[in-house]
Structure formats: C-alpha cells, structure tokens
Amino acid sequence: MTAPAAADIRPALPGEPEYARAAAVFNEAAPARPAAALTARTVGEVRAAVRYGRAAGLPVRVHTTGHSAGAARPMDGQLLIRTELGGGVRVDPARRTAWIPAGTRWAEVVAAAAVHGLAAAHGTSPTVGAVGYLLRGGVSLYGRRTGIAANGVTAAEVVTADGEVRRVDAGHEPELLWALRGGGGGLGVVTGVELELFPAAGVVTGAAFWAGRHAERLLGRWLEWAADAPREVSTSLRIMNLPPVPEIPVELRSGPVVCVAGAVLAPAEGDLATAGRQADDLLGPLRAVAAPLEDSWAPGATPAVAQAHQDPPGPVEVLGDHLLVGDLRGEGAEALLHAVGPDSASPLVAAELRQLGGALAEPAPHGGVLDHLPAAYAVMAAGLPGLHPAPAIRERCARLRAALAPWDTGRTAPGFVESPDQPQGHLDEAAIAAVDRVRLAYDPDGLFRPDAMTGTSDLL
Image 1 (cartoon, rainbow, N blue to C red):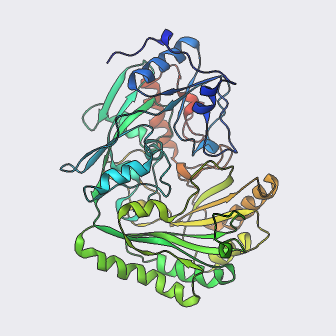
Image 2 (tube, one colour):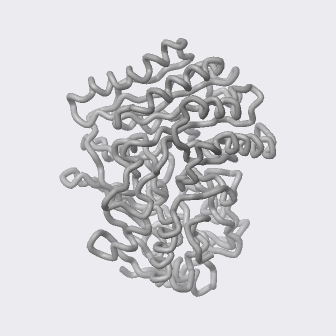
C-alpha cells in the first residue's frame, strides 16, 4: 500500500480551522491542545502522518470523537491524528462479522448489522466511535450475555510506529491483537477492526422515570432483582438532576428523578415473548412502587437500544468519577443514597449504577488483556460545570467514592474513567508488564507511548 510521503503531510496548527476540527472532543471539560493536528481519511494518510510525527520528533496521539478526552494525558508538544476512515461498515452475514473502519460511529454499525438480523455489543450512545470504544474494552447493554465487547474483536488493521500496516488476528501477530484489546492504547493507530456479531430477533428496551422521592424503594427493589437477573437483561439505575433545557420534559426537570433504562435481548423469534416476561419481572415491582413519570419500555428492533439511555447527542462539558463495586444490597444502598441524594441541590446531573455480572464477570479464553470485569456494578457520577461550580462537583464525587469505599473492588473500566488523576485499575501488575513488552517490541522509541492511558503502562 503506497502512502503519501511524510513531506506531503502538513498538519494544521492552532488557530487554523482544520486544527479545530481535528482536535474537537465530545467532553469539552478536557479540550485537546496538541502542537499540531490532522484528520486522516485513508490508511495511506495515517501512515504518512505517523512518519511525519517520527521525522518531526512529535509523539503521536489518536482519537476520533473525543468521548474519552477526560481520561487522556495532556497533548502538549504532540501530533494528534483524528481517524475518519471511509469505506463504510461491511457485514458478512454468513460469518456473522462486521469490518468497522476507524471513525465509524455505533449508529452505523447497529444499522448495518440489523439488516441481517444481527447485533453488535455497542455502548449506550450511537455517536461514540466504535473502534475507540472496543479498544477500551466496552461495557454493552448486551454485555451480561456477550461479555466485554473487545472480546468479540477477531482482527485489527494497525499502523505501527515504523509506518507499516499490519493485519493482526489469531494467526498473525496475536500478541499485538491481545494487547490492543483493553491494553490502554499507545500501541499504534488502529484503522479498522473485525467484530463478531450475534443473532438478535428483537429487543425489549427503553427507559422509565420516577420522582426522586421514591428512590429508596426503587433502588432496593432494583438491587434485589439485579442479583439474580437473566443474562439477557442489562440495565442501569440513575439518580438524576436534569438540566432546565426545553428538550427535556418539564416533569423530568422539575426535581430529582430515578431512571431505569436498558435492554432485554431476544436472540431468536420465539424468544421475544420471553424477553417481554423478563422485562416485566424487572419493571413490574418498580411500577408497583409508583406510576412512572415517563415510560418508554417496549418491544422493538435493535437500533432502539442505542437510544434507550438517552445520552446527549452533542458535545458537553462534564466532570465525573468512576469505580467498580460489589453487591450493594442493604448498607451499600444506604451509603449510595446518603452520598448522592436524591437532592435537588446536588451538583451531579447523574449518579449511575450500571449492572455488570453474567458474562462480563467471566474471563474469556480468547479475549484480550482486559477480558472481564470482576464486579457487580459500575458506578459513574457526572456533573455539568456550566450548571454547578467544578469544586462542588468534585466534592460530591469524592463523597460518593468515600461512601462506597467498603464495596470498592479497586478495579475500573477504561471507557468510564473521566480523569487521568483518578484511581485506575484496568489491569493488574502482570498484565501491565506483559502489555509493556508488546509496546517495546512494536514501538521501541516510544512514539505512541504518551497515548497510553494512566495506569496501563510502567514505561511512562
């Protein structure tokens, strides 16, 4: 494959329109400020950009949408490559796989798979870049049945520090594929991945909202259900203080609310009725507490799952925190409510429990370095500095972390981390050392090393 020469590449500099486009991030609380930036739309342009960075003595960084900008190391004095490769998603229905070019958003992958009655282990937002999500592990609303999303990556195309293109899979440089899947980055520029898909005849999905005064009873019943829930069901419970914007119904922004959202997978035609019963097992006891203010749970097609969580579609300024915890029934639930509310004065727009367990908690024989999450729940807290002072948001996040300390596993999920300064436990010491050996083999001079997430490398 012939690439443009490094001399033919001219990255944009601060103040230029292309710089602003290439460096744009989703989380505006963590702007990217590299020395130079460019958007690569072909593999050849990626190769040329990597060679340019090496020749200019600029470490190379990579992003697409910037959803994880909050967890990224500073980019001062570095070259940023924004991957926006064309070609579109290619689905092989016989093999049940999809080839996903870097830069593809999940909405496109979900739509392409659904045509063939298939689904992918995507995240809660249709605007997230699929490749970046997968390289960070990926906790899907199908995850309790499918496991960590990265385990479904069977091949990748990556431009390494020498500017060469490598196709890696189980038979070709498998150690690089293993490290790419959850290793924390800093290994090269991934230009595409092959992902396993799975049958999905339909889903029951949506979100229900209740007034915050019902939080204690709703949380207790949800936790009891979640302890033995079927693997086909993945949900979250959020205590929310939604901002006063016209797009949000008045009843949902007039005080604290509790939201239960998620999906129940029906892998075959006859399973849709079963999925409905499983959803009723969850929602029936919750609806008995009080009538929801809004309730969109219903049978549907798989593309509806990417809308269920109602994540913001455009860039936002967010500060937050994250940890993985064990069983919170009883005292854990009390500690959570005491720390976060429901409180109309809380600076947190959301405090979320994401249901884990099932296949997410089980090591995968052919998975990547991050192949499971040994925890019952992921905890995420977030506030909007545009609505509340940043110190107040950080203080409330710290209060929540302290309150849940007895249940904290010490582990984290890379896609949920909001700051490089927060505790991170994606990998244990042995895994970090093993990934570092791969980094040294493919990038001995450390061209990509600053792109590694905090806590995933001892080389920095």
